[in-house]
Image 1 (cartoon, helix red, strand yellow):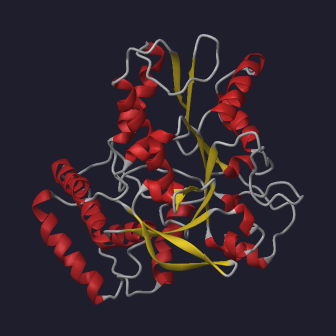
Image 2 (cartoon, helix red, strand yellow):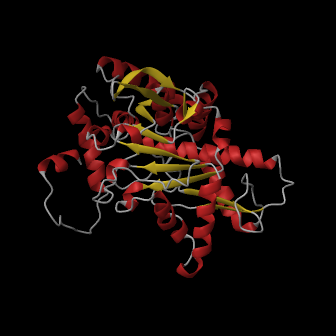
Image 3 (spheres, rainbow, N blue to C red):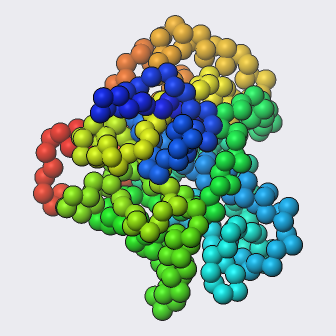
Length: 386
């Protein structure tokens, strides 16, 4: 499903929300034709921030792949690597010439070594906003297990097809081709690092190369970031602590002049006021999805038989209206809880606390047998926030 994103306007030293919808990638990267080098995407838990980054990265892979298929006569030697971290979609693409210097554009490699990467990219690119899997340890994101007992997969396919054909939001994937390289970083895995280049080395390169083989890739990525237009996706500023000095956001050295950063965070982190306005070029607010009832139809298509889908969905819509749950279902995580509970015969009366009960239960069921204690008991406010 297409995300509902609005741009916040800078007014008298503060960012205020106006009805300024963002429906194109171009509007994410630019404000009044000026390139935004530091972009913040904020939203509450479960609003779809991580999924938006994942979709953006996958769209970049698709558009770049299609673009390169039309210019296969290149003499460049190419390596394309897709690395999966705990969120399963860290993406890093290297393109270099015989001299190991970065080239002007990436290409595809038909060698067997990259067949896995190609198949993985294809597999994820065929997934919709609704079913894209973003598994994290601290958040619950909507996901569907392909091995589960699906009543009628054809109903699900029809629902997905209907949605994909009806939405043109963020369809300008050609805007992504302006960036030659994309790096995805999970900030909670680099809580003590400040430098973005160091994060890339630790999270991506170190997971590919042994310690004795890392010097050459380190130099290559450094040259890439100096010379090429790069896009760094930094997910979860609210889970990042950084060092104890004046650095309040991850930093780039000035020589990486063509690199753009897109940073996701929750509103409370922005409200702390520790990030200087001079470090912010644009602030976007993610408010969930545009068509929550369409997403509810897709979810129901995975839970009920095809013959029952229309009747069940009509009844669900009346249920949402009668119980005044309309303001809650724009959040994907809340919508999934409401739909799944509804199919199990559990109906909510509009209380958020009531909805959070099954959400917390599902989290507790994922707990493992490992026990740990706080080194220093956190203040009550921190416990409440988490």
